[in-house]
Image 1: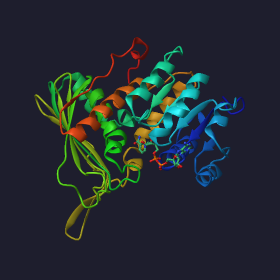
Image 2: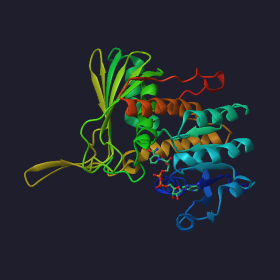
Image 3: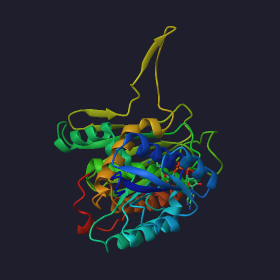
Length: 344
Ligand SMILES: NC(=O)c1ccc[n+]([C@@H]2O[C@H](COP(=O)([O-])OP(=O)(O)OC[C@H]3O[C@@H](n4cnc5c(N)ncnc54)[C@H](O)[C@@H]3O)[C@@H](O)[C@H]2O)c1
């Protein structure tokens, strides 16, 4: 940490929509850390973000930042295909890392990361599955864990973006968007995922070439819960992540846009978040504050690289299911003891 301010000094790699939002969060809303370096393949973007962040400088590449003794921790927010090449040297150095989801794009590279991490004495990589910090999802998990409504039977999940600039292929739809559902369903049910099937209705005219949008992903857990996930990333009207859980004695629903209801001109309307940045703002803040608090002690307090690996295995099955129309088995390796102490 900085000996004068006592702040953990964070280098942010990738200053796009998510990276820039995390920089603002560290600078303006959470405590115990500050951004000292911003790296982006687009030098102008790095400079723009660094210029608006007191104490931060734009740096040309991640390798040089990784070797800097004045950098205490890394936040990785590049697209998923670039995560491994930054994670690997960070793990060699033993730096605490917050890595945006997905950990990596495929199971083999995720496995390489968890194998490298297990050479250390404890997990140091936290993965950005922020839904686990969302108040609604946490309440739903409490209902499921405490059994207030009996056993959980079914989940109906909707994940809709107004539009998505990043996701433009069938595989990325799974790896970048549905990956959140893989993580949250395993977390909510406390169970490994067993099988995945993907069905495609007629596609929206707003879908980019080469991508059927929307799609319906059916996920069955080892515990026998079935989740149907509507993934629709060009839904136009706004951003929505909502889940209805069906229990033996009732249902519980989260994610309805209820913050502001307006009545005017003989009509009633409700505001809807334009993007994930607004919908999950509090979850992102909580997630990063908890990471900072833990990382200052060389630990993590949230989803681990193993959760990233499990999600990557599910993504591989999901991509196979998408291409074949078949129901595909998910075969993640058993969780090593090294990762068993994470309670989030
Ligand atoms: N948790 C969430 O809800 C959530 C939401 C959106 C995005 N994300 C994740 O955040 C990551 C970034 O997404 P985004 O929407 O900000 O994308 P983006 O395209 O807006 O930004 C990515 C940035 O990374 C830069 N970049 C690319 N390769 C690089 C490299 N090798 N080194 C340095 N910089 C590089 C690009 O120039 C760009 O500025 C992705 O992994 C994405 O899945 C997570």
